[in-house]
Image 1 (tube, helix red, strand yellow):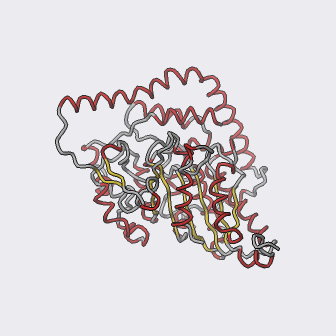
Image 2 (cartoon, helix red, strand yellow):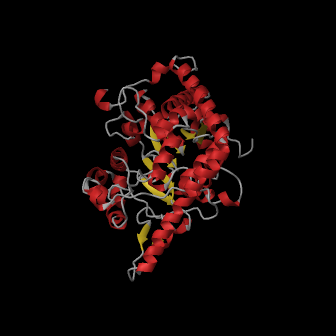
Image 3 (cartoon, helix red, strand yellow):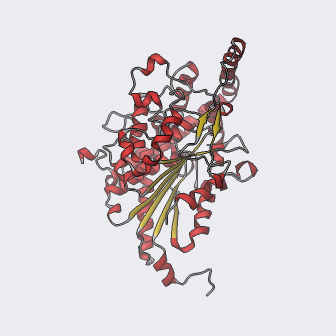
Length: 458
């Protein structure tokens, strides 16, 4: 037998780690080909890779909760298969891309409730470009309101959840806020992982901007000409230094009146593409767009009903646990991305800041994780001090109260955060995992290499 094919006894002894990959909205297992092949190439017989497929394509319309139940069943089925094959799985890692990161966070809560972590050690939890705060645009201005209404009405249950307009079961709160509640089974599950890491695009993510993928109340990368970026030396110029990713450049002189007027005019002009898209592209494709949205929403509701009735192959009762610990397709995707990409961030005014906690005003509750709970976390502590001085000079985004609360809670969990700077193309959401082939997406290989070499623990 060749050295590249270990004997069955060797496989049984060595394969003790299950790594689960979860794709995003409108996605399928092929989108995760780079991560899958990288894992298998590096760890060969040591890791069994499960690429979840039960939420492929339009099935991602059906909601984060239903998607999480599907993935949980896939994991339990795979563990039984591995046991029957003679493997003794002792560790598990869960990786989510885009919407898959939220589905993964829901899934691990279910696995914890099922007692899985009593016998299997949670190792690595990683997300790539996942909208942890939802995709509701910071809420000032008519453009933001239009986007929030359009987006939330065209993606069935998942859309309502992503835009924070759902009321999850009997909680009266959006599902994503429950996922980030410090008293929830989902946050308890997240805290059990040895490593919690996220990768967030700093520019050109037309699906999920930096503030939500980086769990941040600010976006220091809106104008790269005004900041200096620090990279991880071995992975420059793609992976940002998590300790001090960016500093604001000093302004030697205050811009003259004419220059300030020019900047204001440019800001107004930046809004024009968004409204042009509404007045030109949306009417042209409105029939196909709305027809497809309607069809997929109806089909999604049918699948959800069958799931709730236990007719979709999953015993729903098995995954309907108390959530609070204390209570024990491409055209449509492109259209939404183009509209979202033209949105400019909206900020809190000075008068607004008075009503928020000091940590929100200073930027301490952004990607620094700088609150009292975060400082207690071994992972977060390393980055708190330097990040505080780094981020306090940037304006606070006009997020909702729920989003600010989610930032505080998730930062307290101790995520290690890496900004990702994709240079070669304008579609960094796809490039961060090299979802497609081609030079524009090659930098995704650097991201995968960094993750496996620096953050993934076998």
